[in-house]
Image (tube, rainbow, N blue to C red):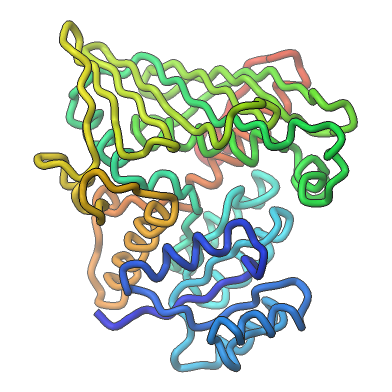
Amino acid sequence: MTKLKWGMIGGGEGSQIGPAHRLGSGLDGLFEFAAGALDHRPEYGIDYGQRMGLGNRAYGGWEEMLAAEQKRDDKVDLVTVATPNSTHFEITKAFLEGGFNVLCEKPMTMTVEEGEAIVEIAKKTGNICAVNYGYSGYSLVRHMKAMIARGDIGKVRVVNAEFAHGHHADATDADNPRVRWRYDPAQAGVSAQFADCGIHAMHMASFVTGQEVTKLSADIVSAIPVRTLEDDAMVNFRMDGGAVGRLWTSSIAIGRQHGLGIQVFGETGGLRWSQEQPNQLFYMPLGERLQIIERGEANLSPEADRTSRVTIGHAEGMPLAFANIYKDLAEAIGARKDGRVMDPAANLYPRAEDGLRSMAAVVAVAESGKADGKWLDARPPMFR
């Protein structure tokens, strides 16, 4: 297949997320990094883009990039939006309506209404809108999903998900601009830690179980008093397939580094996976011994085999998980170019609908936390 052309907005020099996207998009040779508006400061974006080899397709802003790429016969096939949260809706909307496929960083939008608009625009235009819940790209997360779907642990009873780190625990660092914006409603929206990390854990709970969150109850706290938004949250939730969920997310958990993990307990077995040790999936069948499933070993599911690149025993990291999302998108874009219809069950990139559900959960967590844990409907209005 001819390489698809890829463009990026944001993710410039010094960015936390930019390198992971550039590594992931290029890993399988499916995308060529062809264009970018990499910094909100035009001169910096152009300079860095040119140093990255983009030439005259290094743009000073996303509006310039949109206008210029629309005029090209070889316009980019996919645009990744990796800018601050408050800009996601405007940029994603403009590129979808401009005829481009989009991969947007999470959260997809700042409001539920914006999220519903993106879903409708994607349907109307026929363009792909994906959301980067990149951890769902890990090989053993895909295998976990396959095991649950084929009934290896029976009916799911309880899901326990976490995403807790301690990197914002220092009160003396609370005014650091790289930290402060995350707790500023004007830039982050109605939620900080849950919108930043908690939604990854909640998305993973839905992704592996195949169930959607219907209602939730939240206890939130700003442990560092100067913060307007929460830095720790405990969320109880219910899912449409009958599973009960527990989710803890924190940015003040000193001693935790990344802290994303999930456990799923069914009628006949349990599964456990941690992003910091992604090569092992722990499987406990009822009444039997604990089994450790290794990424890359023989006789795993097709979903795991498809997304495993390096030999067994070698580390699989976040850029490889991102690469699986890009691989899914390349296949979906290629199918559309060829006029083929793909089975959504065989192509697992997170969609705009997932981003919308996450935004509805963010709003419900914020409102429930202010209402002493009142149970609220976690579904966006269009899905009720």
